[in-house]
Length: 327
Image (cartoon, rainbow, N blue to C red; front, top):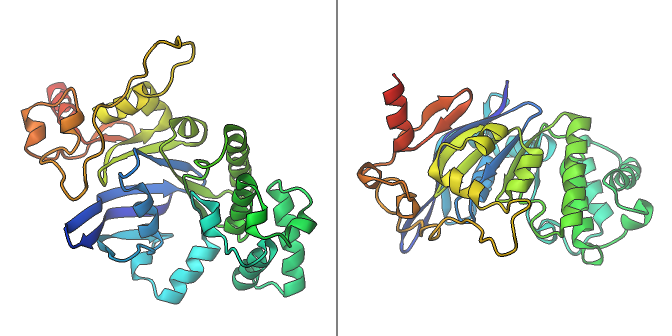
């Protein structure tokens, strides 16, 4: 059963230079209790998808069309007060940089207390006790002292744990985690991922994980959505996409993962070129200038998304051609 359903979502930024299409016709769902990873290179529109879901796109950005159905209600049509409550009570969010998500002039504990009072209706003393418990539950040592600590006094890993405590203190149905481990060292990354999985198991929440780290995807995600230049190029179960990617872009991402046992002198595979300027996208499939398998059709139109297996889709002319040949 779908908890979140995104339908034909399009978000653009209207600049002096023209319209920048950050998200262009994206459709996907997140089911109860599952983890879905939205992956792709930086600049592909992943974070704007998250901000669009919460109707937090900054100016001069604007959601042009689409629906964001959360528990069968379109959040883009919800009254402001209803949307504000949904953001805190039922949808939590963890941003890439925890320092930017925390108010620097208030102690950590006060920020948790405010959430508990607003969204769980707790009295101040009750909320203060719960804040201590929450900090302890996310692995922060001496939580009774840390509630009085300001964000700048904590390490990056501790700040991220505090952000997770705030985001999950209302037991949300959905947690949106936008690059939650990027700024952390490898050991702390593993601890944060373990914490998120523990909280997911404890509360039964779904997770929309936004990342470019395929190692994190392999560990966490049930399904993955491959995004490039504002569009979804391939979707499906994580195991299937790792073992048998259908789109050349997905294949390129998989080939870029360092191989265990590879020699030091063995070069890493990579995708040639870089993500194009979203204000000046190439005609046709936007990946064709970087694709070694492109042919004339790829330069003329963007391919439709088709089913390529159980629970799998792909937007590639070669997949369409192969599908036709199998009929």
